[in-house]
Image (cartoon, rainbow, N blue to C red; front, side, top):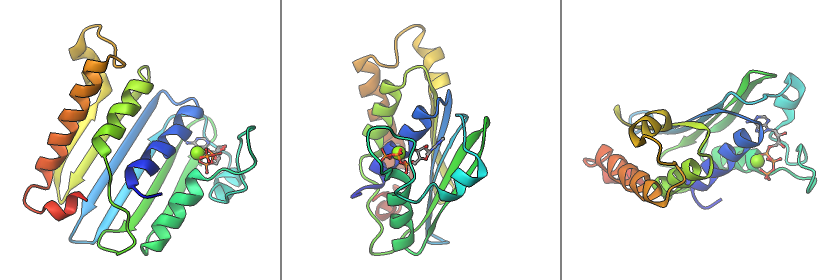
Amino acid sequence: MKEISLHIMDIVQNSVEAGATKVSIGVDVDSGRDLLTITVSDNGRGMDSEMTRRVTDPFVTSRTTRRVGLGLSLLKDTARQTGGRLEVLSAEGEGTRVIATLGLSHIDRPPLGDIASTLACLIAANKSIDIDYHHACDGREFSVRTEELRSRLSGVSLADPLVFCFVREYAEQGISQLCSTTPSLLV
Ligand SMILES: Nc1ncnc2c1ncn2[C@@H]1O[C@H](COP(=O)(O)OP(=O)(O)OP(=O)(O)O)[C@@H](O)[C@H]1O
Ligand SMILES: [Mg+2]
């Protein structure tokens, strides 16, 4: 995939399909350790240990529409190409955590992409799921929590187009301010 944001979209979709009611997304940029870490955790149905072990194999899927499942295997390839790795932790009935570690300055590391639009889409498309987004850049932090948004919106739906635009702009500004001293960390 050309952008990290597209991987995030795809991995969160797995959580939605697993019936999660809570999903946490983390993006951690650490220039000191030269690492970019993406984490997606959910409280969905989880997987047994055998499935968890095999899940990054493209021929392992619970899809009924085709026999390949590419989301996790593509993210694993991306992580490995940058000298990093993909870890999947899961427990049946409890949830799943996907942790991708990428080499931040590696030439094959895809750009972050349009994280703000991705987040706005995920929130609008899954209005009843609690989504927490956390972005850290060398210790400075920005977050969006739908639980908090819902309480401030007093009844207005998270799928409302005005909310979509607000979330996108808020995230765009918040993330760009995080790395204002080192803009290269934003891409
Ligand atoms: N968060 C999760 N919770 C429970 N099961 C999961 C989760 N993520 C992945 N899986 C299981 O792992 C399988 C493989 O996931 P993967 O994203 O690689 O492919 P896919 O979702 O099946 O297909 P694609 O991503 O190409 O649409 C899924 O079909 C599902 O059974
Ligand atoms: Mg998938």
